[in-house]
View 1 (cartoon, rainbow, N blue to C red):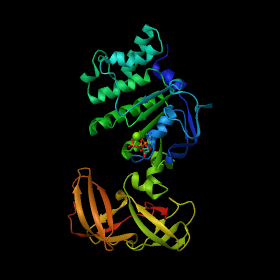
View 2: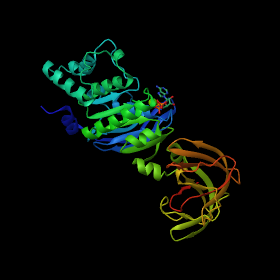
View 3: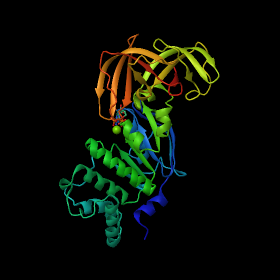
View 4: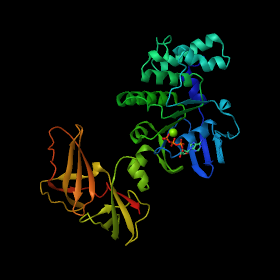
Length: 373
Ligand SMILES: Nc1ncnc2c1ncn2[C@@H]1O[C@H](COP(=O)(O)OP(=O)(O)OP(=O)(O)O)[C@@H](O)[C@H]1O
Ligand SMILES: [Mg+2]
């Protein structure tokens, strides 16, 4: 007999979503979403509360019927296939374990319903318990387990039926911060090891970056950008994404001149601007056009020494200075009263600058992102 892991890897599906929409009366909860999720992907729907993540996931599971569009698992159209015939495993935020059943019975439940022989059930439950590191806990009840352990039972119960697709709707949000990171790493290891196609829903951008192979950023029912975590963070293609994933400083600017790979801007706050346009734009921008200059807090360098910089200079005053151990976080107000966030990683014995000091900020031409206004 194969292990559960081997069987899951073989049966895992790819998912294609074409122009999918869901309306409640005349409100679009999901609107025109198209995605291609490859076999073995860890694909995340990321976006703020109410943007349509759960609705989209429920359509993949079959609990919610779309008004428009199609869903395919491999080459099979799933629109009219009921949830129990789709062979997907779903893990919810509330683990939904049976409180009166032992861990063993909770995990075995789905197999019993499928009329699997007893000896095979025993083998598969044992296998699933090992996968989530819960050996020896089979006789406990959910109330005798920690939150993290309950979450593992929920995962084991889902994996034991060998789904071709794993759906996870904010599965870690009931855990405290430390445990959440621990479980997230475990989930990551398990998913990569098993190679099971997974769709994960979260509004936590750090979690999404940490765990996903691909991310679809959603806003108001639509997917506004999709890509790898790195593409999403380093090359956001609009201001909503840049603002939601990580933090950013935005400056409204005007294109003064373009020369080769560089663009020179008129911004209210930046002296001697020179920006590499190629890292964020397909084509050089037109002279006179409006652009939003986007600089991550960690790309800003700060100094109170009166250093002479040649380009990309902002002058200002420190408003707040926060020591966070691994990081020093500043809020700076520029001469035109714009607030700029600056993060300085904290190697040993770095000088912490105090509030009220006059400082100079700078950033390098290849670290800024340009967005069409
Ligand atoms: N059954 C329903 N009837 C009417 N409106 C609904 C229904 N289900 C969801 N909605 C609406 O659709 C929108 C999307 O809801 P959804 O639950 O998909 O959001 P979400 O991104 O999962 O949010 P959260 O992060 O808060 O879970 C919301 O505005 C919600 O109020
Ligand atoms: Mg939701």
